[in-house]
Amino acid sequence: MSKLKALRESRDKLAKEANALNDKYPADKRMSAEDGQKLDGILAEIQAIDGDIRREQQVADLALENDVDDGGVNNTLRDKHTKEPNKQSDVAAAMRAYMLGGISALTPEQYQLMTARSPSDINNAMSTTVPTEGGYTTAPEWIRQVEQAMKAYGGMYSVSTVMRTATGNTINFPTTDATSEEGEIVGQNAPAGTKDTTFGNKSIGSYMYSSKSIAIPWELLQDSFFDIDGYIQDLLGMRIGRITNRHFTVGTGTNQPAGIVTGAALGKKGKTGQTALVTYEDLVSLEHSVDPAYRNSPGVGYMFHDTTLEALRVIKDKNDRPIFVPGYETGNPGGAPDRILNRPITINQHMAEMAADAKSILFGALNKYRIRLVMDLRLFRMTDSKYTEKAQTGFIGYQRADGALIDVGGAVKYYQNSAT
Image (tube, rainbow, N blue to C red):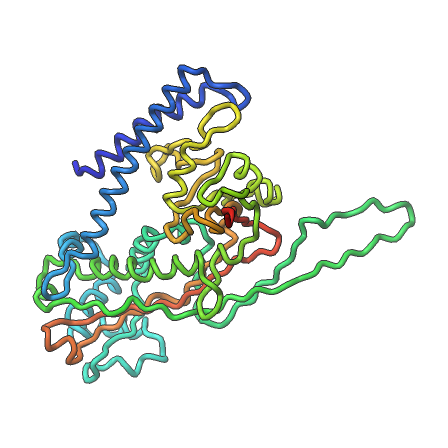
């Protein structure tokens, strides 16, 4: 058993104990001093284990990024992807053949499959006589693996509404704030009143994102046990996932997507002196700054940086109960996620850490943020002199994407630390 897996199992066991102890007391009953001390001890153990897990994950991520040999290949990622025989669709098999040997390695049937997945605007690039081959949109199961990898590098893909479109034309979304509108009682034979709704407009276009080039030595391409597609999937997920998550979180909206923080409204401002602090009362005010119509809808929760969670763990409510309840077996049937004030939380490392004037905590209907992905990811294979001189083949992926918070009624609010 790996050290990381053992740490997570220990955390799950302690989290179940903490939940069982916390559930003994209803919200309006104060926890006994003995059980309070016991719960504090369990939470302290969980916090220590979370620190160990975070460090182990950071070590693994650093190894993933920095374990590069003289040929520019990430050895950790390479070792992870040893090929195991498995059933592949015809398109996926053609995709792998293309990555290994280019267009000339495709059978006539595979060539037809690949050209069918190539948009007409880049068909002219599909020739073995030019340095860049491809521009193929990837197979469905292939892109699903990339998207899973992208989720691992940021929280926005997990909580947003993701839509995929066939073209990159601008999409206009009508918006309206109907939170203060209501009907009326009409008297007998009296005319009904009128109330015009004011509509606005928000648009989502598309920006071209690149993975930057990926160089792979010929030796690895010739190794039948090397899972070339899995290797590239992880790298594409890492690179495109990080930059898009950053923009979907704090993007300015100028020559890049407008992030969810940019589109959110102020819910609560910290008092003077709270440059790196948030209180229980602040969180209650933040929640109630969101209209109940949104606050009680699906998809509501908190989002913040991991260091903010560390500060929230020690906060207690007026009955001396921790507002943080650890989850267990997250992602598994019967499991439960970590929660703050009984709301699910999403860790997003592109959220600002608590500091002077920082917008450090989001709360609300996070699924009101829409991520638009245009078509499937396009993959190019490059064999020009830049790579040939080093006995390498290059790959690069492109994904068109945009995002925006489609709301004007205050579905998502932020907590802002004090400036002084």
